[in-house]
Length: 161
Image (cartoon, rainbow, N blue to C red; front, side, top):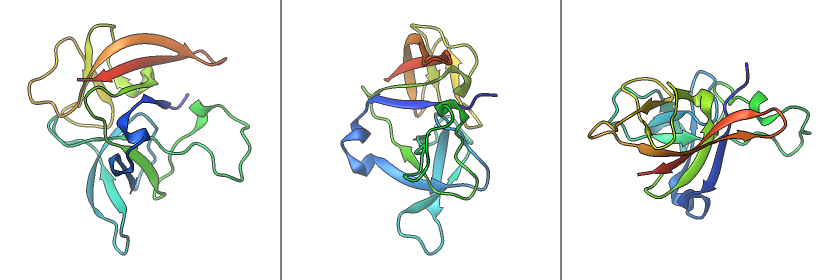
């Protein structure tokens, strides 16, 4: 099965390094998922323990790991990539007005243009909703459904509210 893709189209975190963090967790995770950050990893000064959402009010970050190491060649599609367990990966803090796209597979439920996705009560995937839940820590409007690349990967363009 294809893995999720994340594209930071127009996000403050592309210019403000303070909105980026490094995290790791003990299970693999796909780009486009969401995580909470816990304590610093023992002995590290800027690497946080990542975990699943436990309430829709949790402070969340979007997983945006680097798909290739500098010595690798591109032999697979971006949808073949997964951040491995116990290895550092990058996460981004989304701000109001940010625009990004993620694979439809990274959203629980069916996204519909003009409706929303938000932080779920539990888990690592954003949840499609008709109307946002009051108090949800991250709410994004679905502004487009589109297809990425020659593999025709279904994507969802989102704007943070």
